[in-house]
Amino acid sequence: MIRAAATCLLIATATPALAQRFDSGAPIDVDAARIDIADAENEAIFSGDVVIRQGSMTLNADRVRITYQKDNQGNPQVQRLDALGRVRLAQGSMRATASTGIYDVNARLVTLAGNVKMDRDGNHLEGARVVWNLNSGTSSFDARTAANPGGRVTGRFTVPQKKPS
Image 1 (cartoon, rainbow, N blue to C red):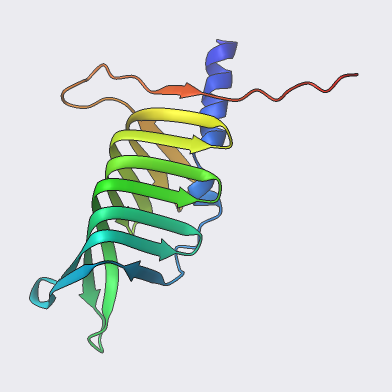
Image 2 (cartoon, one colour):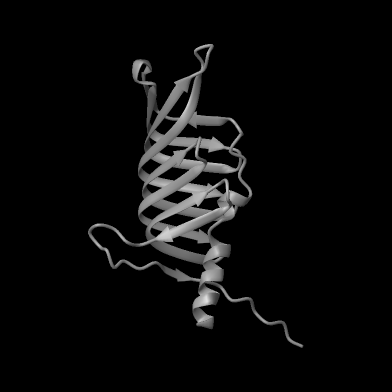
């Protein structure tokens, strides 16, 4: 019981880093080899080593679809980013990789899915999906999928070394 509680505590402290130090109101900067805009559908598709930066967060992927709505002056307002292929997310000392990523700008939710691996300060987690709630500062790591309903999250956590007395 104590071990399970300690593991939950370690997971809780290992995963919410993105929510704690992230400015979701910062501008979103995009760099890519190509952009295709479908203005009638309110979307832009970036491809070719896409790099997206917002505040202290950097998202890299092969392809990113950005959906937007237009304000009263016709200016696009980003609603959601869907990343596909070699998705990498970095923020501070946290690094994560996955097959896909979704950033729901309005709900302030970041989701990585598909063979998710996350490293932070020597701690490591693996699972099928992680969701960061930027509003509450919480996160959830899951390993269950339709193909693997009994999936398990795995992790390795560093233990602080005791200093000699």
